[in-house]
Length: 157
Length: 157
DNA sequence: ATCTGATTGCAAGTTTGTTTCATCTGGATG
DNA sequence: CATCCAGATGAAACAAACTTGCAATCAGAT
Image 1: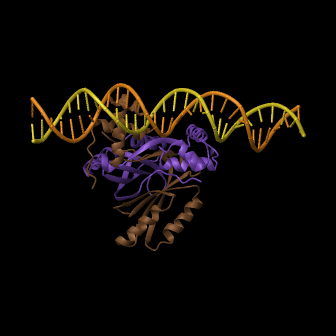
Image 2: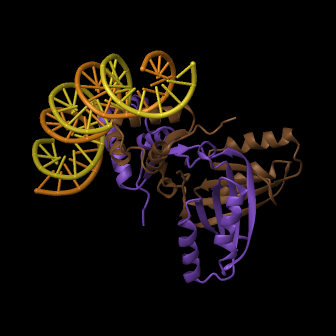
Image 3: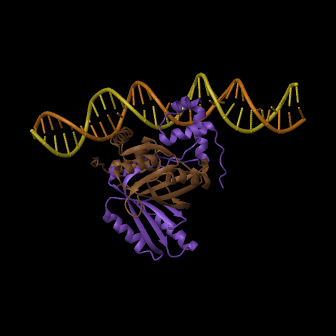
C-alpha cells in the first residue's frame, strides 16, 4: 500500500538527523541541509502525515529502570492456521515486557525481544506465554550478555 | 557502574509519556502527573544527565524509505577468544544495515537485526559479513513476514 | 509565452522551553 | 526545641523554538 513517498535529498538528510536526535532545532537542521527553518518544518510535518516518521520517542536505558536483562526468544508453533497465528500475535504484542515481536520464516515462527528485571520474572513469563499456550510447540531462549548495538535507525540516502 | 538512579513515581510517569511521544509539551506532561512545567523540565534534564534517557529520536518506517525487508540472523563463531569477539562486535556495529546487534548465550553467539532493500542486498551483506569472516562458523536467517510489534519501550512503574 | 501547482524565505505571531526567585519541606545538628 | 541546610517546588518573567501568512520563485504543462 505505501508506495514510496518519494523523498528527495533534503528529506533524507533531515531524517538522518532526526533519527539521531529529534530535539535538534529546526533552525540548526536548516543550516545543516541548506534550507530555512520553515521549509524544514513543513517537510517534517509532511513526513509525519505520510507515516515516514512513525513516532517521536525517548529511548530509555533498560538497566537504569530496573530491567537489566534482555532476552531473545524463538517460538515455534504447532499450527499455522491464520486464526491461531493472529491470536498469537495479539497475545505477544499485548505484553509490555515484549518490546519487539516478529512473525518470521525459517526454523522458527516468532522471534521476541523481551526485557525483564530478573530471570525469575522471565521464568514466570515463559509459563504464561508458552507453557500455558497449547499452540506453542517449543521455544528457545537467548540471553543477551552485551547489547552491542541497539536502535531502530534505518539507513537513508 | 550505574546503580539505579532511584526514580520516583513522577519520574516513571514522565518516562512513560516520553517513551510514547517526546514532543508532548512539558505543560501537558505536568498536568498529567500533577507537577508544574519547570518541575517536569528539571526531572527530564536530570534523567538525561544520568543516562536514564539515552536519546531522543524519530522512528521511521523502514518500508517508507526503501528498506521493506527486516531480517534476523543468528551467528555462530568459531572461536570465542575475547580478541575475536570484540572485533566481531565492532565489525557488526559499524554496518548501517545492522540496526541491532546482541552478543548472546545459547545456541548462537550473536543475534543481528538487519534492514535491507532487497534480498540481493542481503545476500551481498552475508558475503561481506559472514563468508569473508573466518571466525564465522555458520549463520541462520529468519526473514520477517510481519513486524508485529516494534519498539524499544521499556515498562516503567 | 503563460498558467498552474508546489516550494521557498522572510517576518510576524504563537506556543513552548528555560531561568529566576521566593517558598516550602524533611532531616540533621547544635 | 530552634536552627540550619539541601533539595524540590510553583509563579512569573524571559528566551528560544515552532508555526503561519504572504509574496516571490521555479518547473512543468498547456
